Image (cartoon, rainbow, N blue to C red):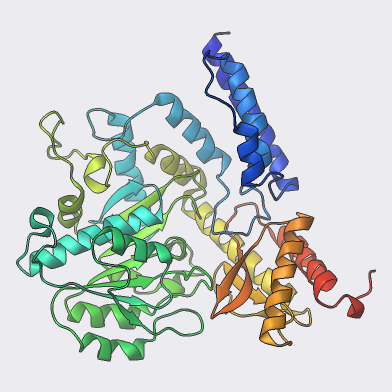
Length: 473
């Protein structure tokens, strides 16, 4: 066996061993400080054997790894990195392709073309849209909003891509109060400012109040970009696209949808009603490493106006080959020239699951989230704070007690849950109060896993919140 074959087999063995242990392990044994101490050493003067390096890497890293691939990881909206996607990603690394253009990486460019077509079909978005394969929804939002910035300025007679924003017409950005932080970051990166926005009030689910829109639209003139949301990060709430998008379009706004996970409701007959009207927008940002279960990193910037997309992103140089009729350069749709060939893992997951498999996966996650909520809500003192319409739920412990006491017990319960390590869940703030947030996004989270998680959460709360009322046994 060659040295390379032996090395790759060892890496595969270590990877498989980690994945097989994930269902039984849910929190890292090392925090950052312990992980840093494990790796901390002077730069070696002499090299080391290839196999020894890989084994040492696995041995040193694994205590500090989160088990995001396990069925009871609910801390953030993170998919399970399905084995098929991971295997495709192994090949992607081994092939070493730079997905900058169709000449440097013909297969990588071609698979993105087909995967983009499949994604638009699956998500029921306009077939003429272009798709950029980016790191995730953060860069997808940035990319789409860059296209929006250029186009709304072009309509106002200003070439923002050539002249920048110095002297440009003012752009009004309309956004909901509970938009995700990465959208505000994208606005900052684009020179539009994370605070220089027109914020609209939201309801208890974080959805924009449609009644507030007419007054907001009457308060300004000129170019406008509106950011709506498919899947609020805490509640899973969807903005009312049917009423909001036409009103915004009448004002001449470019409408962008942050749909990091919620846009995948489009792929399910059971949940498509939540995203009704979303296809009328101008751009959409979503992730593959959430519900499509691709490995990190993988996201999609989708833009209806392909020319506006390319104007904002194309990198040109004399040494780079030009794409002609019928060809597609991946770098024309993303802010990078050199990058990973993310289309391979996307193609593999779409091919493996198919339309029906993706719908079934989404339906299973959402059913497990509802089961969690129903089970937890039966426990006195636990309050579910959102309508569990998708895969997200937020809850408070000792909700029948004063707010400060409930906050303290909620924090202690989260600590207890993590210490017991049956599952991993994260805390958050919602409307100024401490909550436990659960995100069900893993293809392995079945009804049985959801029940086990709910029982563990209830037991942790009883031990912290009111142990005298619930004797052991």
